[in-house]
Figure (cartoon, rainbow, N blue to C red):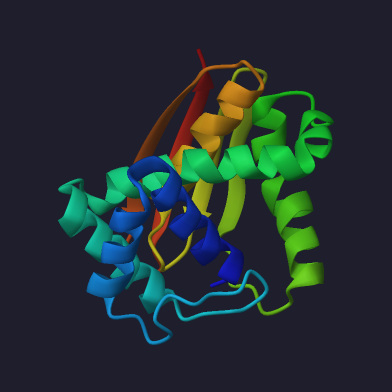
Amino acid sequence: MRGVIFTEMIEFVEEALGYEVADKMIEKAHLDNGGAFSQGGNYPFDQMVKMLTALSEITGKPPHELLFIFGEHLFSILVKLYGKDIKKAGSALDFIDSVEEYVHVEVKKLYPDADLPKFTTEEKDENHLVLIYESNKKLESFAKGLITACGNFFNEPLNVNDEIINETPHRVRFTITRV
């Protein structure tokens, strides 16, 4: 998993909950590197699971809720970095539909070893998009947070439903409707 996800997670916890909570999360997670991540690095996914589990224990919030909130936060960071490019898509549904063909292709150019989820469009019209998310990391709540924040960025509130359709490989159907 890319280091930027780890560094943003730590910064998010520091901003939202304070430095003490971030320190407790890192300490409680017993990370191999003591919480020293670089944005350009690549780290085992289990380190993120340890941080998320520790944060869940500290806050009393379930991991899926924390992942959703973190997804919303991370989209705001992407907007700061790439807002003009995101806006070029024209709408939230068009941008979300382009993630696999545009965003993930660009990420792979920069980081060929990046282990990204796969998104396949099943249906699409002007106000409705059905996507299949596939990843054994089971981060659909994180994806749902990104999707929701994307709708907010475009000032297009979205209703996002998710349904697990397969466990191995882990596949989730997102039904996204413009409200």
